[in-house]
Image (cartoon, rainbow, N blue to C red; front, side):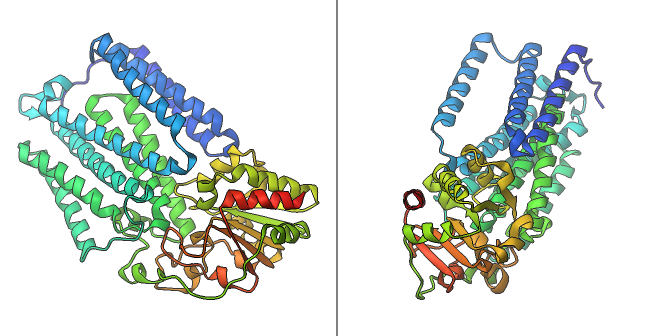
Length: 470
């Protein structure tokens, strides 16, 4: 074992303050009402950690540091200004990939120049450092390649349909077993072929774990990759001897894992299957339910929708990705305000995986200043649909699809849904009848007697409804 260098007490205090800020940030981000100050605390904590690290380590010259910070800051500022809310899920996946790649590069640098990292002894790299390095490079590489696939699926560059490889579970578990075995062997022999084999296999397994996962389950994947990125950062924190990285990585890793577990329970999925890859996408389910159903349906107009909702006692609005694409959240809030003026009770029903990442719909509704007490999660509002006059579904296909309960061959089978079909009338806003949801499954609700299809761009349709309410 190598002796740790003495830590400046002021540095330790600064990292402790940063860690407290990160913990309070997570606490704040747990609720839409406190998310703004939670986000600010997270930024303050990261600023303290970065400034402390730069001030206490001879990393590069001031000019080089200023150039790196300037370039990175400019890129981040431009992305933040230009990114649309609909593209946030793939942006998050892209950022996760960068965290994973950073962990791989740090591990590679530590392996190639261990003396600069203070991990070199008489017998070579310290055994404990080899474990940290192996775990960091493995988790980082898995995070990188998995996040790249998630980005491509979310961005539409790759089909959201599960891609099934023959014997994928044997391949995945076999590859993971080899990686774990090589990391163990790396503690006894630090030969280059071991380190680089672990790196390459980890890149490969990250790819293999994500491609079998279908579109409906991508929000859980994004959450799980977030957890992976945290654990990769924590592992590298041990290698660098940086307590701030260890604290931050552990917080991100554990919170992401807990969120994934909660979402899996909400979707009736197995948490272990998330880690193994390809959950919710058995070979039978992958092919079922993907074809378009050619059946008659009832089409309505904005005037019809306005009349029905104006006469209702309660309307439950179910937002989905279609609302996000059309950026219809502001006019949707305007519509609900007008309905409330008519004495109609308006509530919003949010499915745990509505959109493309956890909390996607909550963020959009908060952006439109929708009151928090009008927004309800699935388990809190699902029983109310049977006593509701109108369910107004705007771009939410998979999370309202009864196939999740009735069709065992469907890729979304077993996922809890919002029971909009139980409402007296279902108003379903959809651009056209030609497409299916992200999971590639047509929705039986479209063709039911109590459903009226409102075929148009979501924002345009809601704007016309608002005019008709006037």
